[in-house]
Image (cartoon, rainbow, N blue to C red; front, top):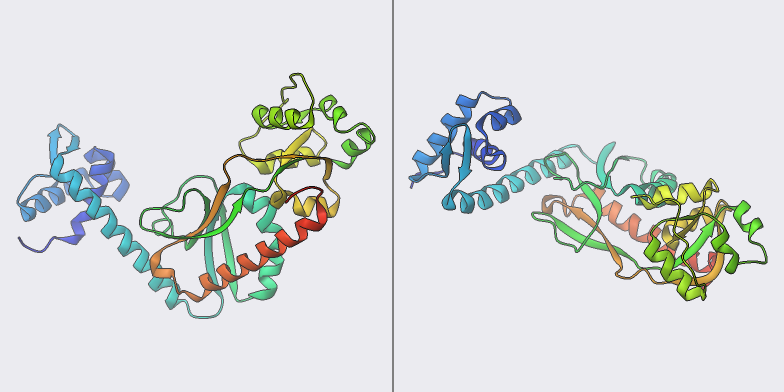
Length: 308
C-alpha cells in the first residue's frame, strides 16, 4: 500500500461526520466536487471503499468506521502539535494562555482572583472562554480547559484540581438574615427558595421540617443561583468554594448550621493537549491554581459554620 495522502484526511473526516458532501464542502470552504475527488483519490490509494454512496449522502461502511477512529486521533495529534509549537514560538514574555472554564467556576471563583494572577505572572495574559459546552481544545485554539467529569477526554491529558464535595448550606442576602434572625431554621420555609427541589427536600428532612415547599425558581448554572440570592430574590443551597468571597465580603450570609451532602462529588480537572504538558505558562497556571485552591479551602474553615 502506498503512503496515505495526508492532505485528503480532513475531507474524509468532514464527509464522515456530516454524511453529506455539500455540508462537508461548506465546512472546509471548498466545492463539493473537490471533496468528492479527494475522497475518491484516498479510496484509490487505500485500495478499498470507505463509504456507501446514496446521492449526495455518504454513509461510512465498516472499513470507513475503523479508519475514521485513526484519522480523528491523527488529526487531533497534529492540531495539538501545531498548538504546542505556536505556543513555544511565542517566547517567554508577553504570552497568551487561552483557557475555557465552566461559567460558575469562572464567575464565582476564578475572576475574583485574576488580580492575584496578574501580580504573580504579569507577562502571561489570560484569555477566558466561559462555557459549559465541550470544546475541541486544539481546533479551537485553546491551550487548557477546566471541566467537571470523570477525568477522561479523548486525545487530552487531565489532572485533578479538586473535588467539589463540600456540604450544601443555606445562604441568603443580609436582608434575608435580618428577616430570619431568631426564627431559623424553621422560618427558612417562609422565604422564597431557589434551586433543586430534591436537594431542598433533603435539607428540610435534615432540619426536621415537614411539608412541601417547592422552590420558586431554578437555574442551569449555580453562579446565577448565587447572584439571585445576593439580590435577595430567594435563599439558595450552595457549596463553600463558590460562596467564599461573598460570605467573606458580607454579600451572602449562612442562615443555618444544618448542612447536607451533595451526593456524588463533582470532580474538576485541568485538561490540556499532551504537546503542552511542559509548556511554561501551563506549568505556572497549574501551580497557581493549586495554591489558590488550597488557600480557599483553608479560608473556608474560618468563614462557615459546620463541616467543610
